[in-house]
Image (cartoon, rainbow over all chains, first blue to last red; front, side, top):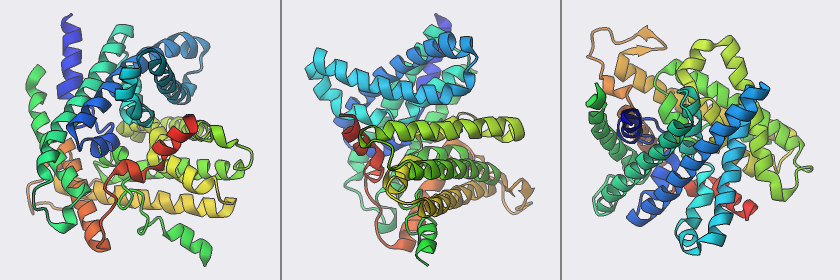
Length: 192
Length: 216
C-alpha cells in the first residue's frame, strides 16, 4: 500500500509529467487557456492513460515478450493508443452521451499526446507490474490535469497584463511555465 | 532554384520549432546540452527523411480514409530502425535520450510534413522538404541546447568555455530552465520576424483536426 502511495505522489508531484518530464506540452500550451477546457481535457487524459497503460502492459507481456517480438514495441503501442482512443470514443457515445458530450472533443486530441505514449514507455522502463502500471498511468494523468488546471488559472489573469510585444503568445506562456516548474521543484525533497 | 526553396523554407521562414511551434516536447526535454540536441535532431531528421520518401512514393496507393494510421505505421517503422541503430552503435546517446527516442513517433513535425507535404508532392521535393525541416528542427534544438549548456554548466559540447567568468546556473539544465530558454528563444525569433506566431499550437499542428476528420 505504501509503495502505491509513493508511486502516486511521485507521478503527480515529484515527477510531474508536464512540468518535470516535458510530456504533453502541446495540449498544455493549447488547452490551458480556460479552466473548464482544462478540466475536460484532464479527465479524458486520466481515463485514456490508465486504460492504455493496462492494455499495453498485457499486450507486451503476453504477446510481444512471449513471441520474442520486443522490437515491435513502439509500433504496437502507438497503434494500441490510437485504436483505444477511437474505441473509447465509440463506447462513450453509445453508453453515456452526457459524458461523451463533455469529453468528446478532447478525445481525438489525445492520441497525439506524448504523455499517453510516455506513460506506457515509462511503465516498461521501470518494470512496473500490472497494478503499478495502471496506478502510474492514471496518476500521471492526474499530474497532467493538475498542471493544466493550475496554469489555466494563471493564464486567465495574464490576459489583462501588459506584456512586451515580442513576448506575447507563446514566449510569455513558456516563461510562466518555467516559474510553475520551479515551484514543482520544491516537491523534490518529499521522499528523501 | 525552385527546389532550393523547398529546402531553405524549413530553416527559418517556416522553421517547425520556432515559427510553427511543433514538436515542443523533445525540444524541451532533450536539449539539455549541445551534443544531446544534435543527436536528437539527427534522429528526428532521419525518421523524417525516411517517412517522407516512403509516403511520397506511396501517395497514390494509400487510400485517403486510412492515410493517418498508414502514416503513423510508416513513421513507427523508421523510429524502430533508429532505436535499434542507436542501441547498437551509440549506447551513451541512447541512454541520454531515453524514452524520447520512441516518442519521435508522436512528434507533430513528422506527421505534419507527411500530411501537408509528402502525401501531395513528388519524391525529390519531399526529400528536400524533409532535409530542410530536419535541419530547421536541429538548428532550433542546437540553439536551445547550447544556450542551456553554456549557462547551466559553462561548457559547450563538453568543452569548458567560461572557466572563471561566472558561476554556472544549474537551473538552466533542469526542467524550469528548458521552459525559460525556449520562451526567450521564441521571443527573439518573434522579434526577428516582427510578426506574431499562431496563438494555439494545436491549430498549427494539422494532425489533430485531420485525424478527427479521418477517423470519424
